[in-house]
Image (tube, rainbow, N blue to C red; front, side, top):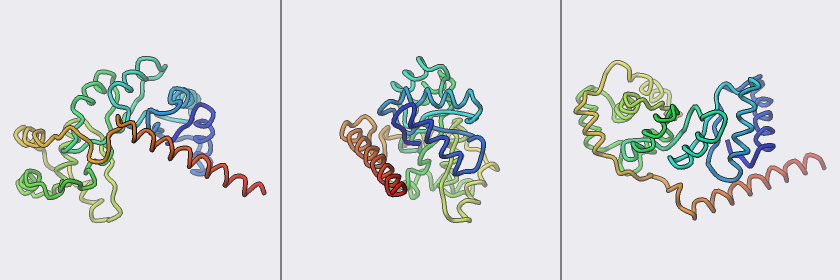
Length: 220
């Protein structure tokens, strides 16, 4: 979820529950460590303690920001969702998550196929070895590393393939070869880039203004 601070975050969660017609939400994540993320996370802590959220966490919190929030918040984030795929394996970030007992969750586990990931010869060869697709190899690789994966697809046959990954195990050689594919960089953009932070701040402000304008129209 996007966030602006304590009050806005609480309102957003209540509004989400109203739309979902439910009395609680299983997991709520803060999208980025920007703006008043401390106030926003404090709101999630309170909602968790009140039973409205069953689990809370963060997204795109890289090691410095994760250690920050884990060290000073009352509740250590239960999940941290970050871009994780063979070209950006988040090895160092995972070490810090493991240290603070934060579950790593893969965002874009296929990297949206950028850089020819689906056609990568290493992944293709491993897939042929087990009679699996490169997508299935990538999911199995992440799971064996202790990474939670939430692959997205609108095609029923691919959804079925994404579930069909528990009848094989990658051996140590496979895992080592895939590890060598790590480019240690995002396939999309750097969260440390000041220009990206400016873009995100502008996007949040525009959404906030659009939301306020929509309410004004309804009131009129």
